[in-house]
Image 1 (cartoon, helix red, strand yellow):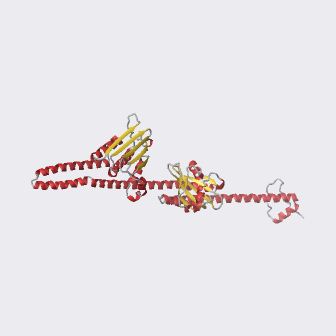
Image 2 (cartoon, helix red, strand yellow; image 1 turned 180 degrees about the horizontal axis):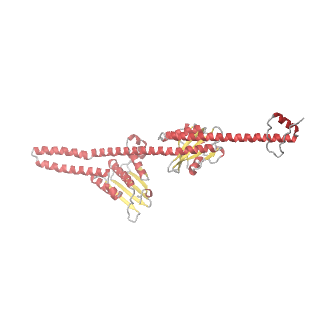
Image 3 (cartoon, rainbow, N blue to C red; image 1 turned 90 degrees about the horizontal axis):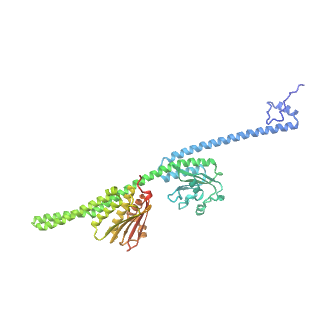
Length: 463
């Protein structure tokens, strides 16, 4: 009887090959001793484990590739979605809503850096944190968000309770329990403008893939925020121009009505009076009235020239702020007999002159002084109004002081919006043009002082 010879697997072999037929396998097993069978079983088991590891790695790579593809699709979708609106609030809300659902978190927020403090202020919040009645603030450099805003490096914290960097004040104020945090910076032309952060991932811990996805979304967000802010800036500038035009129009209307218009009306009456006097052969009376008419005409001409000067003082462009103020106060003094107007200039410069500044800054300061003096002449009942400019080093202090009736600053500020006037608004905006700050000090019956402080380093003309 002939038996089938089966080649035994070598002892040093790591893997075993399966014979093709079950009968052959059984016949082979009859001739193997126990050690060979054990070795064969071990090698076979190892081969199966190796194959399982390969399948596992392939599955992991497939899932990662699929997740990456979904992430790219999400980023593209968000980019298209954000480009469809220029409303900053809507941009941020849309962005955070997609992030909230894509990464599957409990809460999220977008914080932008406020100037000049550097603090982070929430612009939009989703989740339970959005139920808070007041916006959140994170002081400069505090918390995870503060560190990301300072360094521009994303941070993952999967155990916020044990991380000393975690800013717990928001949790204390809202009752929210922060467990995990993923925070990435928002950039605008290489400048950090804020942070995008999400809290408490619902299905496990934050991963590097989550960080990469959120960073990609944040890159789109920076562009969208810039576009929305530029749009809002243009709209705001347009509104400022419209409001300035309205204010100038109303002021011109008031000044014409109270000044030249009244004088022209008086001239018309006097002309009619002279005509009647001449008709009745009252020549002397007509001559006297003609002298009065000449005075009225001169006053009307002076007032109209003053209005034209105030609308656009050409001397301000050619000779500077001090020359323009001198001419303005001289012209106003010719119309005022009860109030004395004074201009005082002090400077520590070698020529004892106030430094020339950018044209728009000098125009803003001239407008501030002009409006303050006009208001004082109308309402302060003052004996003296003094305009004082003092330059020391890098600072220019401008003060408009009167010894009139004064007013309660806090009372006026409290109901200012209901009075329908833009005086305070104009002052604030013009001071902003000069990169300065201001304060108003006034007490009933003790006069008023308006002071504007300007850093010259920010407003000197470019060479």
